[in-house]
Amino acid sequence: MKIIKASIVLILILFPVIVFAAERTVTIEWAMSDTENIQGYKIYLAYDLTMENAEVVCDTPDPNSTNITCKNIDIEKYPVYFSVAAVTNDGGELLSSPAKMSAETLNPPQRLRISQ
Image (cartoon, rainbow, N blue to C red; front, side, top):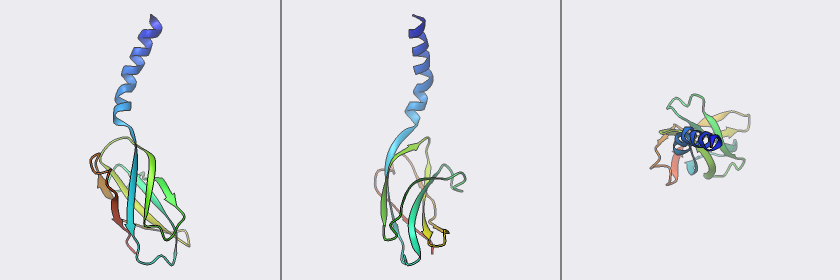
């Protein structure tokens, strides 16, 4: 009986976390007019517009790519912000402006423009 009570308490404690944290698949599209000095792209996720504590959620080494589908992204809360970075041959990054997304706006492909 004590094991059952402990399990129920554990489920009740974990339930809110399970409800709010969700793994999502997100497709990001971007435009890059000059890819001559580009070696790939990174997709960043953050929970504020400043992109403070942003983390890379997926990347591609293809300099000619214009989209990527990031699978199993663990999103803890909304809104969430995405930014795409073009990685230059010298290791630098050209960043797009962050795009704010809610749970409802994550499903269609998100289009971002990289500043050069």
